[in-house]
Length: 126
Image (tube, rainbow, N blue to C red; front, side, top):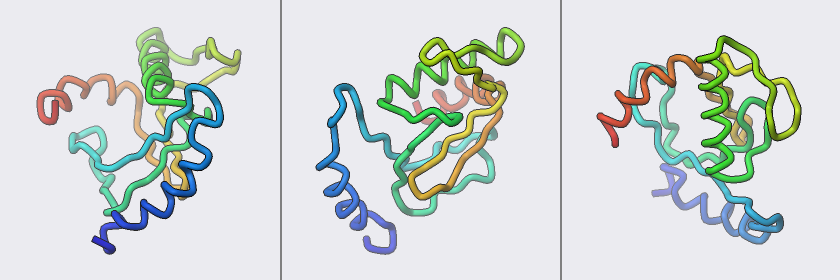
């Protein structure tokens, strides 16, 4: 279990839980697995859990926040490009989804590819 990083998460979680929900509506988002599909080919799960910090440079507050940002990026791509974020009035490049984790690792995928592969991922892993 130690090699998988499974036990190390307890130390991290103990530290984070003391800060958990200091702000109303915040949640910790952990990547615990990568669901295989052509869109994320080449990314492998490194046998440890990772805390997701930001999507496209925006600090994430919750799974709902992450999902809404994904939907906004998909809508922007369907409309042909850059979009104004309703939340902060910041211009956001929606062509790519850049997920940055606490350990500074990152996953970058094309938004259009993610949108196109949704059905495949749900059919395989749903």
